[in-house]
Image (cartoon, rainbow, N blue to C red):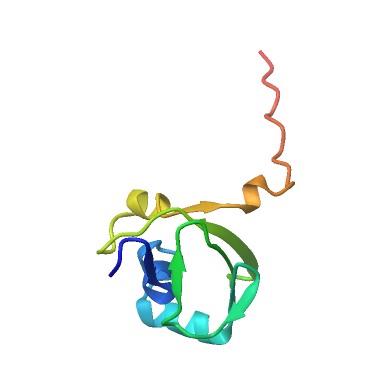
Length: 101
């Protein structure tokens, strides 16, 4: 693997967005978006900064590729591979609850 690109199915699996690599390949073949363009080839390469849009568990997830790894690591390592863009896209979080004493 080159240090600046990785197969999309492998990256989705390493980032723990799917449970298995075969599930990642099936998800890609069903169609996901890479930088706004639909792709269906599990062998398609992603690069740093690419934006991946996929449908997971009845919701749409939009993430930016922030890194790669050779082996699938723990959850903390997986979270370092991407940034979830939905939290920065105008969706507002609930304000903190007031505390009464």
